[in-house]
Amino acid sequence: MKKTLLGAALALAPLAATAQATLTAETTTAGSTPHYIDSTLAAILDSAGVATLQITEGATLTNSVQAVAEGRLDMAPAPLILPFLLSKGIGPYAGVGPEKGAELAANLRVIFWNAGSAQILGYYNSNPIEDIRKLDGKRIWNGPPRGAALTSGRAMVQLLSGLKDGEGYEGIQNEWPDTVSTITGGGVDAWTIPEGLPSGRQISIAAVGGITIHDVPSDLLASELGQQILAAPGHAPYSVPVEDVRAAYDGNDITIVTDDDTFDSFATAFGQIVPATMDEQLVYDITAAYLAGKDRFIEGSPRGPFTMMSFGDLDGVSQGACGAVQIKMHPGAIRAFEDAGHTVADCLRP
Image (cartoon, rainbow, N blue to C red):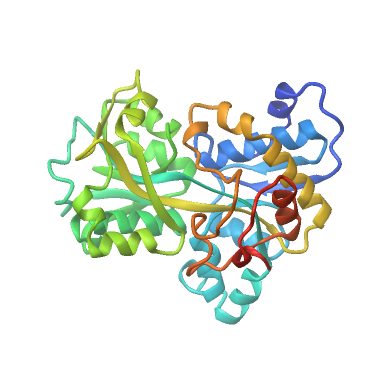
């Protein structure tokens, strides 16, 4: 379903100037962190007179990343594992191959970063998981048919229980728009999803009946496998006071379970990507508007304060980009960050 998020932009900025450019973008379903970021960015760019952002919702970001790399799409939120896999021509990009994959990945540039979603495990209280370390024989929704979320979902189940998809449990996948209906329809015993805070998707799931959400137990996160997953391409550590998580879901039938006073997991590191060939001044204007719009991003939604976005200095490591993932920033974005008084690590420069 394709929607041009002009109505929201005009509602937020009725006196907005005429946009100078029309750009195409793809994002995830409504209620997700990438969707919130992209819809807010659309409003900010329209208000600033920089661009009109035409957004296709419910996209599979594996396809979106390749479309940006091929120059068929202007912008998308990219889980950083996807540019990494594309550069190697492996995983969902095995059909592209290493040589072409490396060529395509070299066409990607980041304009800003975020890590607003963390992996959770959930189930209905009417069909509880007695021990999240024993998931044998369960049907678990663990992601869309391919892509970063599926990789992270499989990693979560393996970390919790030692089981691999199809070997001890049955992984259930479908496209993002069908996720909630699959879960609420009783097609699975549990689900693991990278979620922002609060998650509209989890609230929708809980509207059918009370649910319980778990983080990753501390001993498992500190294990050798846990540390490998934290350091894996596209991941970053995530820790929020558990009382903040409970407060975010206050009024919903959602129980939060942790083994200490923090909700700990691994985050999905994202970069907002554009083609390397995008006009430098346009990218500068987009990024400058993004930086100037910090308050709108933080205050525009209950999830805003928990969306770990880059509005300050960029060291590369904190963004998940200067290790196995070697994606670079667009020169226009670097200039905008530096003009705003921020430093940008050399490893992020093309």
